[in-house]
Image (cartoon, rainbow, N blue to C red; front, side, top):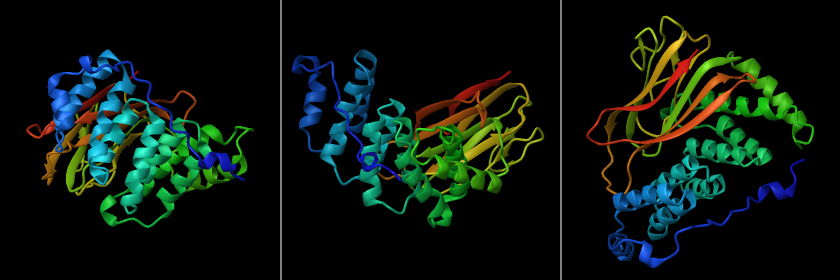
Length: 308
């Protein structure tokens, strides 16, 4: 039932505003000529271009990292997360596809591809990647990945199952009900999901609730109903916090950079965080955020959410 056209994702050209050599500093020109690219220098330049010119210029300079090391899946995933953050979803799709081809045993990549496809409106192909994510057998080290991916999938199905123009309307309706019966959550005032881009890395999600109680791996259920999924200690995540009937007030979302076995200088550990308010309802809002972690700092602020 899926139209053949849905299997082809058009990769849009980057329309850059900065096109002159004189607009590039000598430091960056020297870096681009060096076989060993300076990761930090290029990310600083990307942030400068993001501010001055926009996301297309920012991703254009970061593409140099992938061009110099086309077989480096960790580096490609790193740049893909930036593309997602900047809402360049077609580019993110192709970057994650490169990762998936070289490392097909990592479930987070299939979920990232599914999310990028949903954002560009290719729901049919997105469904296929969600199905791979939740039905394949993954290593136990990825914790409660299936549950977290399934809740994200449910969110998509709830939005598209009633669209008459959607080719998989009947399938989406049936699948939505099946997953809804399996997972008890019908709604949530607040849900937070984090994943990260480097393997052999332990990052812990912490949420400080309005009462002052902290929900994290040592306190997975709080007095007001907050709950944390299984601690993932080896890499990529995901970890999730969910509360159905949230008490009014501030929810401080943080991540503890507990440990890293990263012995490479070409990539920084980044968190990709998705925060849902009013999950599963017509008033749902979603915020995506990427946070780069500092090696000399344990606790990092991600976001503060206010429940009224």
